[in-house]
Length: 329
Image 1 (cartoon, one colour):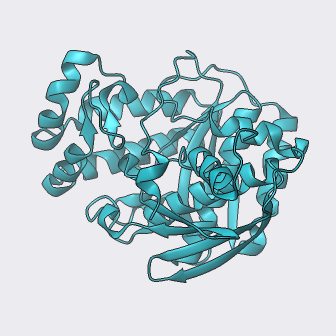
Image 2 (cartoon, rainbow, N blue to C red):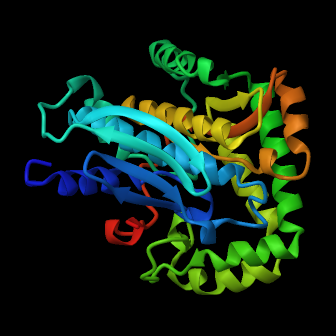
Image 3 (cartoon, rainbow, N blue to C red):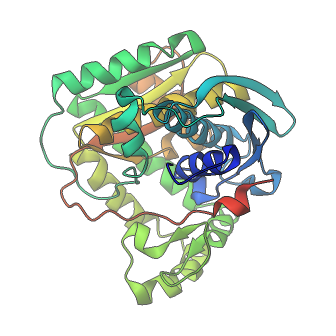
């Protein structure tokens, strides 16, 4: 940041941090416009996933994640002023900024550093409980979002976690039984040597080099549900906690707030040396969200779900990201 001499350069730096946010199939549906006093967030219609996300719910959750990253980074670097939601056509939100490089706001340091630590930690977790102080911190953060109509529930009961794993397995089987879903997913799968800056490289799901070359073919024409269910179930069952975000309403504005809360909590987890892994098959597929809500006795509709804990291995596998030049309109 100190090498950025102009307002536009400083905003570009914030965007570079923001785009590390998660998105379905790593599609990265965000676009940005830099003005004289702000940064505007848009979404790219071509990145909508008709099979995996027909309602665009996940798209707006991803936009909420990238927006929260941007805000956290701007707060740490002393540039943040306010956010205004627009939600008109493809224009989602605008973050107004101070044209200055102020002293760092130390209260946001750990969160800002966590932006570059966060990854989707597929694999097993250590069988250790999360510290009460960390859980209290996460719950306090979530409380601030209740006025936005979204709530967080941290599930630690082993029976409930087992039920989440079983519903996730059911969702995976449903998804993998759909040829059009498999075709769309395969289009976003990348080999380990791919130079593309989006999509899911084989190494991100634990595939060595050679299998990553045949994986797109297998992903498209074979169910692979048995393998995927086994790997995902094993991971979920070892997690000491499952975080579920619910809401009373379904709308793009609500989904955006879900994404902001999800990213903020995930950043807080990484700030406390925890890792997170996103699982939404039990929410996305058919009417399974109702079954999940009944199982966990939620008051509203589940919108987002991820596990958290200390990973058994610390082999971080980051997925690629589009350069700032490619996400600027």
